Amino acid sequence: MHGFHFNDDRLERALRAARSLSVCAVLAMLAGCGRTGSDAAPAQQQAVLRTDQFQAAASNGKLAVAVGGRVALVTELDGAASMRVTLPGTPALIDVASCADGSFAALDFYRKVWVSDDSAAHWRSHSIDGSWRPLALTCDTRNKIWVVGSGTTIASSVNQGASWEQHDFKEDAMFNSIQFVDGDNGFITGEFGALYRTTDGGAHWNAAPRIPNEFYPYAALFVSPREGYVSGLAGAMLRTVDGGASWTTLDNPGALAQFGLARQGGAIYSVGMGGSLQRLDNNRWTALEHGPQTPAFLRAIAPAGAGRLLIAGALGAFKLVPASAVATTSTAD
Image (cartoon, rainbow, N blue to C red; front, side, top):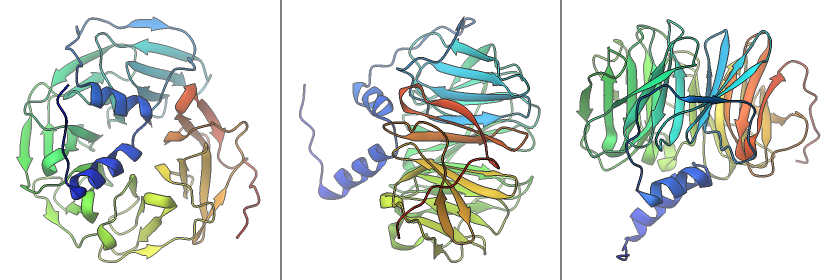
């Protein structure tokens, strides 16, 4: 095996990116040997396995889906029945989104997008051209799929991934989140505090003031064109109320890195290291009880209807939590 040489800057960037992914995903990247799989109908099995490493979750109001590796775990929100869908080949699923029409799109680290109808039972894949690495995706109010990743690259598809339009901002940095808050307004966050926004449904993306101190966001959540949240290294949590023009630090007593953010019932929640689940109360994050803690981390979180949250992560952690019923734990100042 040939040796690799990094300068200090690139090594630090690699380490920051690695911290924001599960061990399973990092090993898949380092292996670099993902082969193309068939797009045949996936095998369906039962139950969650302890080897599952869930990376992201999404809900269409009827179903919630958590993804990681080759697996999409589908749960009915009205009856909590679960279905395990194992995709063919060797995909490495790292993100998932629900579209306005109820369909789902899942991002494969090996430059593919997998799409399903609103049943999430049958998935088909489409490749994304280029040598860049995709890191995050979303689906806008018009069912258009958006993907961002390395090299400040953004790609979009109006036909569920059959063809793509791409744009490269020509910066040596990674984009690692993208989100639309309505039909016009959307945000991209990335390395070195990068923040881009659109006010015309993605026709144009413009650089906004960078998040201070070259902030590296593990997760980002915007709930309106003005209000947004990011989580970063060592449990750092920031909020903007002016569309990213300025940011304030939120009190996070546990100081645990948080890998996922979601809104449910008007409140903001996060999940992260140590199996932590938190809620933002005023300007302070409060730790919440949700049963046995995951030994390593929680990474996926999504609103799941009826005042609940779907949370998932390492070692097969996957559960529906009643957001309004969880009891707070005491956290030392």
